[in-house]
Image 1 (cartoon, protein in one colour):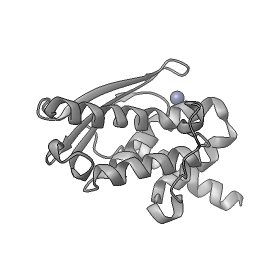
Image 2 (cartoon, rainbow, N blue to C red; image 1 turned 135 degrees about the horizontal axis):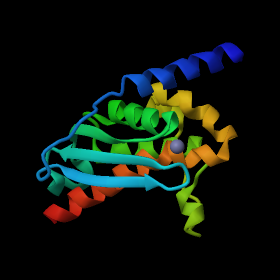
Image 3 (cartoon, rainbow, N blue to C red; image 1 turned 60 degrees about the vertical axis):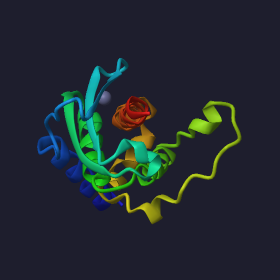
Image 4 (spheres, protein in one colour; image 1 turned 90 degrees about the vertical axis):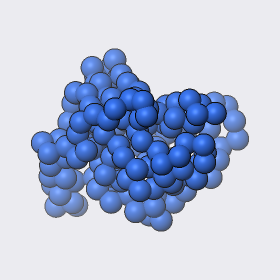
Length: 165
Ligand code: ZN
């Protein structure tokens, strides 16, 4: 088990030291949304480009770039996220977000007081490197670090869809 934890730590540090898709996109046409986690001082900027936002959830992520700074958990999560969502549809990205948050033991629907929705099975969604963040659940104060980029991404999708509507 400790071998697996070592591997996870290596993956997280690799994404932290060599962040994927680091940079900016011209906005517009890309959506640009900033997210903050005041508990830890983490900052994430998501630049999201969809092929055609008017297609709604069928739109495809054609490009994504990440800016910001913060702890290794927040920055590696953003890097892994950016690597995971390229070429996926908005529907797939939303499912992936749900799967990731459910791995982080967060169920938005329950927080909203609505009926708990069936979360997609993370195994089916090929979380890949994101699995390395599974250990964060043991440190509740860090969960917001891990989910910051995902919440920012959802806002970027909303913005992309409403700007063209
Ligand atoms: Zn943090």
